[in-house]
Length: 399
Length: 130
Image (cartoon, rainbow over all chains, first blue to last red; front, side):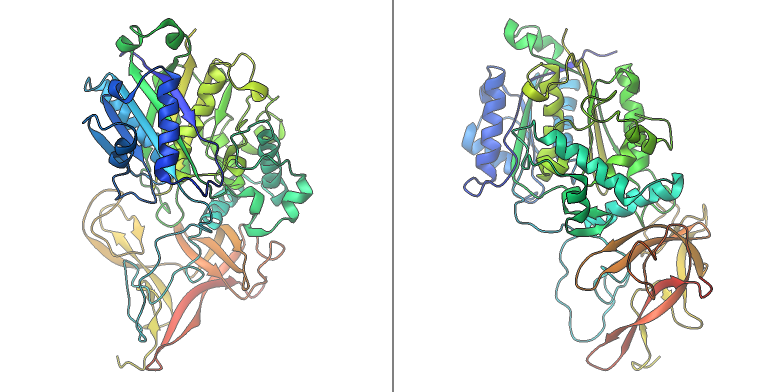
């Protein structure tokens, strides 16, 4: 087995509305703080991977360098939907694994406040006579004609599909998943929304796409997260206080979706997540029973349920019982989304995949304050982007 | 066909006879697709044949998208072929739309263009006996 790679510096900005900060302000803030976290500077960094989905063609990595340090190192600008941040980290890790770098920095940043419902790119204007267009030869928008492409609707269908397969899902169940994450968020000062909701408040809020009401959807917010990773060899040369807070990357996996019938009609977010989880458990040499906490991609309440199953936190088909047992609450057997999840933290797309990992790092360092999961030694962070891409990272505390 | 004939809202809706959906079926592995293909996503073969899709199916998943005119979006399992669709002729609420309910293909007018040519879209609706 190859030498482990370590996270030595980690930071995320508060997620939320930052009207006075642009993408570079946010990215710089998280990057400089992550460097300071491990007593490094840009001069120490060998490779930089930066994700920013909304400006994917804008070379945000180089723009960031122009603010915080143009050292001439290779920059990889990555875009992988909601898995963009995890992909940036994966790139930095692969560069180290390949022996091309000793110190890597991964950054995810997004300005998303006020974006409204996300779906595909807008259509170009059409003429006044019918003209088939695109791969479906459609005469107009497919939304509302051929089902839905809006994210709350797509993920609603994904949750309902689980119900069709295994039974037992309900509006009430999904609302209670959201109730849990909003309750957790009250302890996380970095979350965009720290409001506790009663079950009735969640169920009676604005319905977006049944069964997802507004609090059951992740908010479009601004934010950035950054992480410094090093080779095992480099870690051993670092000051004792940096080594003491280092967190081991026991597994780093990125998958895409293999073909399954229907996967091009409704995204199959299950198979690639299960594949990533399997590979990660195998690489880490641990199983789901060894986890002390999980941050999973609850872009909608309906998504959280299916990932209990996909990440093998329960037996196949048992996600509802897993939730009903109280396990994923912060005082339960396997706390899930003690950060408040994306439903409370918000979901600045490219930052999310690194922020999920940052939450695990914070607990493994015993630095999570009021929301600390006592004695946490092993955690898993999961993210998925439609298209699809899935990142799973398993982290272990140093000692 | 003259321009006064109706036109299908999507390529895979066949209006030449009793309306039906036509998939592109891979000649090697029978994976079925609705979009214009370059090759098969399952086995990478490059030849396809048109294959009619069953006109009835079961709702394997749905959502109800809110708005001034809420609509039901569903995935309909037509004998193993998954079809994205809206469900019409049903009240758009969770009391009426149910998982596993049987539905059948139907069509609706999607409007007329400047030449007066009508576009016909497809949807599914509950079976009459339900």
